[in-house]
Image (cartoon, rainbow, N blue to C red; front, top):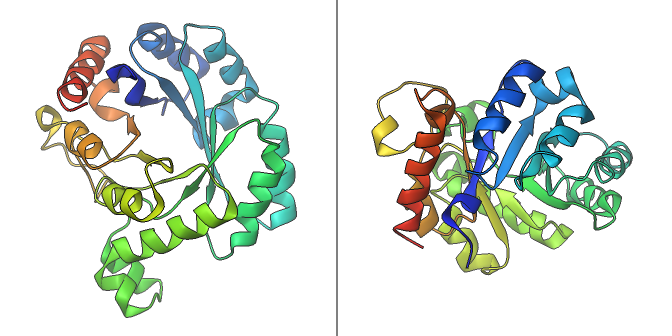
Length: 239
């Protein structure tokens, strides 16, 4: 059985190597993975991945959300596969060929997650982008469609909100991994940010989320370690 802390992916959404090192030092024994996103990777490159892998037992979730022609995505994922990360992301986008290319490029060394619909996106955004009405009125339909595409392409799982995890598990099976951002504990509620489709840690896990991406509620806490422990306790109560 997994420990509650292993469900937590801490989002290292910081602007410098010094800040990243500080949070890794604080949280390496309190979370399962560290998310390295675009900003930090652009600033620090593979060095930050190497540092995380050499500090504690937490692994790396490389969240670059690749989105390009299949040949480019394949070559990029081949490079990612040499970094020693556990997960890497690619947008589901417009074609399954891009997802298939990511899986092929990974050479089985890194688990590929398809990004379905960003948790900052709402129904009005989908409508404005010109999607069919059934997707505008029911975002979960679009998420499920893209999750099926990712599964068929050979991805390990998808990134989705806690609102869709249960439906994905029902449709694609318990082995298909769901990673959920937009996590907001009740004790961190009320702080306005850019997330639209949110869930609590306990709610997301009960809905079938295998990993929870959590940034601000832990990062902005007076005591990040205590905040991480508090999240783990909430998860522990439902697993």
